[in-house]
Amino acid sequence: MVPNWVIGAKKLQLAFAQVREDPFLDASIATRLPAGARVLMIASGGCTAAYLAAVPQIGSLHVVDANPAQLALRSRNEIK
Image (tube, rainbow, N blue to C red; front, side, top):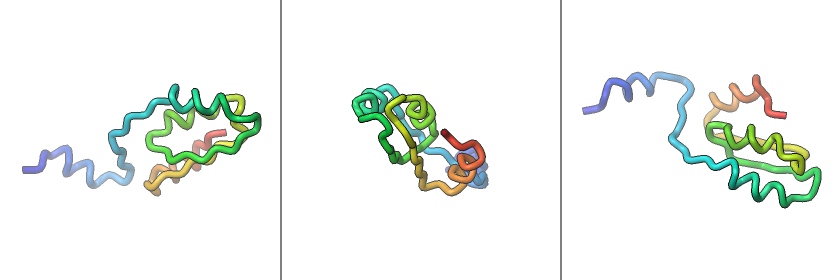
């Protein structure tokens, strides 16, 4: 039997997977990059992307996501 919350969640446009992000691990790599580095990352919830946006070595951060609803949400709240 499928729980009611699963049925309700399937009807929502915006869906999230349970993902384990570690922005400190990614930042430890990003701090070794040359100044002005261009970074492309596959994003999930966006916490790591937000953290990496503050790393001085990163000149531009390009975030992609397989979920079109999340992409639309991010385009309105662009990470700079």
